[in-house]
Length: 118
Image (cartoon, rainbow, N blue to C red; front, top):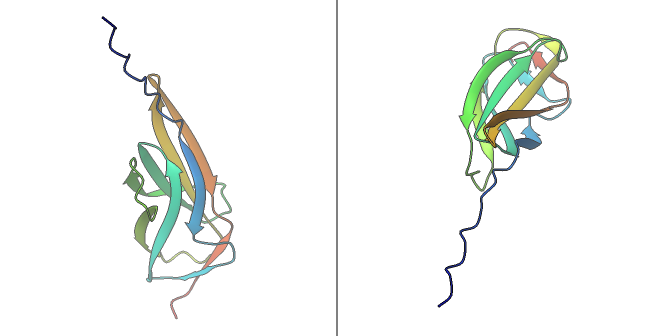
């Protein structure tokens, strides 16, 4: 009599942000408009942050639940704040727990502009 096959061991993937699809470098957001931040990655959740000074400081603008990743990727809708700058930057931070340890990884968009409402 043979033994049953052992169950496969599932090891969670470390967090990654593969790509930020939107915003793109050089893009212009206008104050008061609704925008959609789009990205791909692996993680149990994602923090989305906005910088007005090329990444020197960031403010949290949302959290997106992770796994499983939707076929079209993740997205966060956001209303552009009244803070004019040519040095805006989005940071997406992936968070996962791997072997009982919380791990984080992030990716930044390129610089874009926040301009006055058209």
